[in-house]
Amino acid sequence: MGNMITPNEIAGGAVYGVKQYSYTVDGLAGKDYISALTAATFRESVAIEHATSSYATVIRQRQTKVSDLGMALSAINEAIANMDPKSNDPNKTGSSSSLTTAAALLAKYGISISNSGQSITYRNATTAQNNVQYALDIEGNNLQQDNVSLQSMLTKRDNAYSTAAKLVRKADNGAASTIYNMGG
Image 1 (cartoon, rainbow, N blue to C red):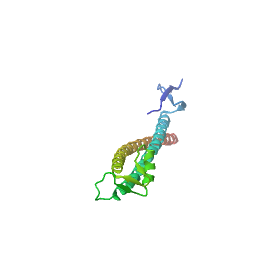
Image 2 (image 1 turned 90 degrees about the vertical axis):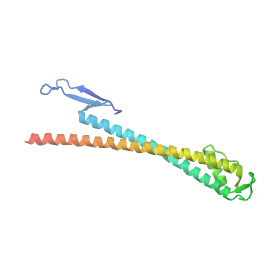
Image 3 (image 1 turned 90 degrees about the horizontal axis):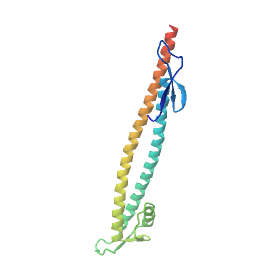
Image 4 (image 1 turned 180 degrees about the vertical axis):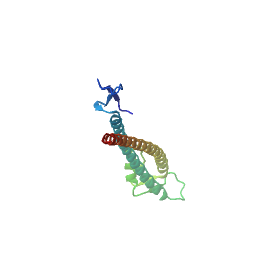
C-alpha cells in the first residue's frame, strides 16, 4: 500500500503485560489497527479511482482519434472508388464531398494528404490511404493495451474497496461481540 501506518506505543497502556498501540495513517493519529488499515485501504482505493478516471480520459481521446481516422479513411476510399477504373494513369483524380473534412481531421494528427479541395490524385490517395491505415493500426493497438490496463486498474480498485469493506465489517463484528460479552 502507498499509505504509511505508524504504530505509536501508548505510554502506561499495557493490558495484562501486553503493550497497547495506537496507529497513525498518513498523519492521522489515534487509530486502532483495524481503523488504521481500513483508512489506508480506502485511501488506496481513492487513489486508484483517480488514476482510473485519468486512464478513461486517455481512452476516450484515443477513441476519438480512431473515429476521426476512420472517417478520413472512408473519404479517401470514396475518392479512390470514384476514379476511372479503366485508366492506368497514376495522376488520375477522384473526388469525395468529405475529402476537405478528411484533410482537416488528419491535420490534427500530423498526417497530411495532398488534395485540392474535394479531389485527389490516385498516387496521393493511395499514399494517404496507407498512412491513415498505419496510424489506425497503431491507435487500435494502443487502445487495446489501454483497455487492458484500465481493466487491471478497475480490478485493483474493486479489490481495495472489498478489502476495506471486509475490515469495516470485521471491526463492527468485533465491537458487537465485545458489547454482547459485556452484557453477559
